[in-house]
Length: 613
Image (cartoon, rainbow, N blue to C red; front, top):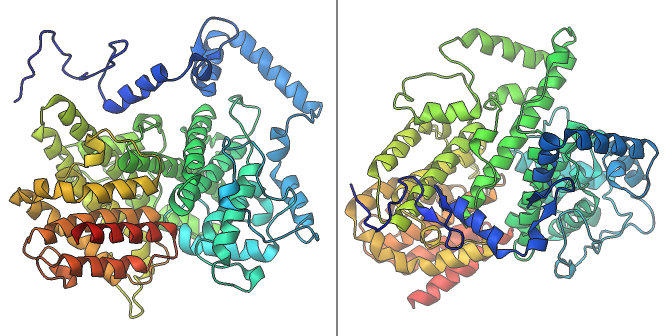
């Protein structure tokens, strides 16, 4: 065990110290969040209470303070706001935008007007702005046509909902959904298809996607200063779903300058989720006495959609920490939801089918296989007996969150070890055991069974994201990210790809000097190589799976250059053939050039080739 020598005792679990105020922290990300308060101007940070001297960095923190410390003023403010809304205050557009039905019908009436156009605004002309304010270069009355909406929703459920399964396909009704959510859906779905109003012209889908993205940002309501219960939870949930889809579009599909807006929407989304109480389950006490099966089914769908949305929010938050080293905004302890229900219950198309599945699952569930909340599930898999203690069946989608928690823990240990010079093999061993126990939930043996057309089967497509997350987690335990340990915080996927590519040759020697590390990472690298080689035309691929695969290729490329036997033998690349490895990579990643990440990876591969020549 290593011992740190200093003139002043260091708290054993607070190795990170602020150089300005000397405050200490357990985790490096907490120190970075704290240091940001010193670097900002007081005017930028402080939101005054108004009733005492307290100041706050976020509106939701100020609202929480008002509820706890000044409840009489908080109630008066709430009543005043209700009265102003009842009088129809036209100066505030928030209340108008949340009336989804009226908003949607207004948009529908303008779809076929002569001013409606499919011409997309230039991306570079979009000014910097907050997630839900400032005018955008999109016509105020523009809205996609019925045909575009119908095709876009089909594309979404065929290509996107596999890795973002929080909207229920069987009950989804476009006429009952807020306009900004429809546009947010279309901003992602038209990355996978072309515009039917332009006769499916090549590239027209990406153009329509950008137009929907900007229009959704203009319509999405702002709840930044509204932490009261005057707006229904459903409206908050729809807003969060829109923020989630839009930020994924910005960060993973548009990339570049749009990433700034994606990160702003991420902050706004989490602030709203926390202040609106969406980390808690939906109350269902009012349904205890109902005998209507359809009502019970729809209540279940709403509660499960709520739960899955929060799990998706948490996944994206952890993903930014994993890839960009951006401090996490959500603790797993905040999430009070159970693990997602089994996929077959969620995808049931009728109330009768759902009821049958509920009954059969309950008969199989006993006290020995309890349904767990997310935090309890993490404790379960951290337990030394996780592999022998059964739990109730759940959707592997929830296991992704558990895997990302373990990845984040590995990142924290690597950062802590880098800062202190001390290495805790016991903690890494515990994480490895937890991932081994989690493996059967994320990586079934037949997850890469291909059809004659080169496409994995439908069941395989739904599990690829789960399996890729697990394989990446196993790699994270063996290899520390030089970006993370170097303290580099990214701002976009573009910069992450460039930095990862630039640092790949310099980290090669460290990797290849340790034979045991090579042996440990090879099976997980081979999984990604086989996936890229065999899945030739995958259309339901989460964009971050492509990023995981590129990470794995960089490891494989390093192994090939150093002559490690069988480094890329699983895909037919000879030992030591660096050029052959790059040629293979250009072929498999070239199949993904329809998307911006695929094009960015191609440029990175060209840079690798120039560096080797």
